[in-house]
Image (tube, each protein chain N blue to C red):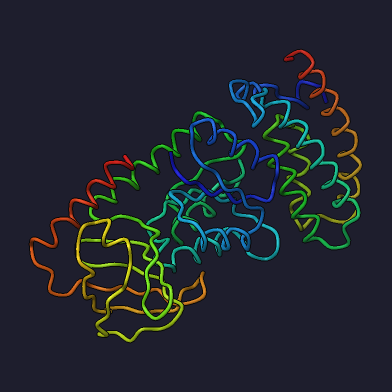
Length: 116
Length: 228
């Protein structure tokens, strides 16, 4: 999968006119909040013992990841949100999360560096 | 400027949506659970509620909308749902059927979001031409909250039940503000509130003359003009 499929920068571009509470470019706050929140939720998702917890964490991650342009990762979370997945399929998808999250984090940092 | 409540469990979504609304000059209250949101709607009056459908803790967005719509103080408040890109149409239909007014698909496009918020707020103001949403204090045995006024009467929240047909006078500075003597009112409806402790009571003004009705009519019109 290419980096372009992993990260759609147009989602953050749509927010470039907005400021945060400190009158700074909102995109920087959004990415910071997203990275902290998603790391916490991915940890929850990996250590969850029941399907409801996985589904809830995956749902939240799906929306927030799509909002910052993480198209490929959001699609994986969408699959994980579906409770009917077999255990082996869930385990495979969870491994994919790590790989795509790392790529997305790098893309986001690169994007912000070029926006600053 | 409007008071807007946003309910979503994702901090990222809350940050994006609240920042867009704050940039338009609105006041925003953010909540991460339906329980928090219910606490907020008990305390404050909102012009718009925006909610996700899938929420943690067992209370989903549908239940939250139903709870709001059961309460007379919240029946007129527009509700917009936020839904995932591939959510089935039936989720949107279900949300509309339980009382939502509109929906927006996530990831949120700021222009579409702003436009939908404007439309819902405008609709609310148009609906308000014959009444005003208030948050005035009153006294009748205990402190009551006056939440809405029409030319015919008031909606109040009371900590105790008042039997239908009871004639009462509610002492409030609010009537002085309108420029009328404290009027007699008669209870026409009283039911337990689904979101606040206490009761929702609808009272009608008793024996108001044309001269006394006029300041009420003007006061409602002026308040709605200011809101517009």
